[in-house]
Image 1 (cartoon, rainbow, N blue to C red):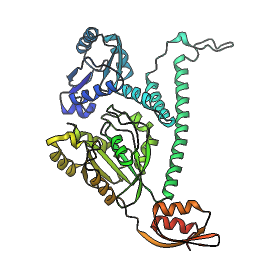
Image 2 (tube, rainbow, N blue to C red):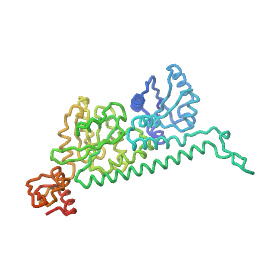
Image 3 (tube, one colour):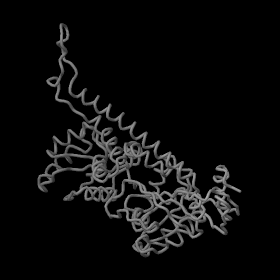
Length: 422
């Protein structure tokens, strides 16, 4: 069930209007959650009804449609207030959920790591807290002693306090996860490895591209939000530089604010990246709008300063619309500084051009010729030299190994601080 506005003034006041494309996306979300969509309804109004969001006549019509289709749940394409949700359930006589609750259900089913589950639970509790409803005074706790026989703490207040305590506990646990991620990033920065973050609308093909670039086996599924937990893998560029590629959660139209806040620890991978690969499904009729929405979310999470390459994926399915779309998005793409590249992550077409674009967009790490004197037993340093540099000559002197090599300047600085340069 969607609601579109009759005027621009209503859209400015009440937020983005609903549309057939938005309902299509909601239907995909419902299918991803395991639902069978039997009917779609879009009403046009000047403003939402305070009590039921839609008008009373449309609510009665919807109740008849639900009864005829034997539907178990009605999903609204906007976030409902607790009062609207309760009134609609009474009127329609079936379960009513909104877009936010549907997305939270999908996230809860897909999260695999401890961090992902904590993030989803935090978003669910923040969503649930204003929607609690107690059973009234009969659930009260009475105080003991003279003069304390009045109504005590209600069950509703107890539930709210318990949820608030749980929210605080999860925030502390996620803060420790955030600290752990920061430590891991510092460790990675000690070795000269830049990080690339894949970002984009959900189902744009990020995981397929991630697997194509890194030969990983991350789940790549046509379902929305198939990937929630971030994965990091190494990639060797044509210049023989090694970088790390991070696959992140996809974005979506009207992404709930609670989810953006809850997934802060994950989205920080994008903030700290050296380059963002903004993946766009060029076969989608809403490709331009989706690209703009992702650009807005990247700005919201503080990643506006990170250079971007616009990766126009699924060119094998775009057909004749590919070239005009490439020109339009290349000219108006949101914030990209590394240009736009058209590819097909499924077939591999254009991947070479993408790797060259990444090489050109990443900051250059100059190489130096150095001579190092390291203990013969220091295998870790020898491995670094072979992995990130080019070893020219090796000779042994007593218990030490003297190595002549060409290495990146960033690695040279690290070795100099460790006192391993001859």
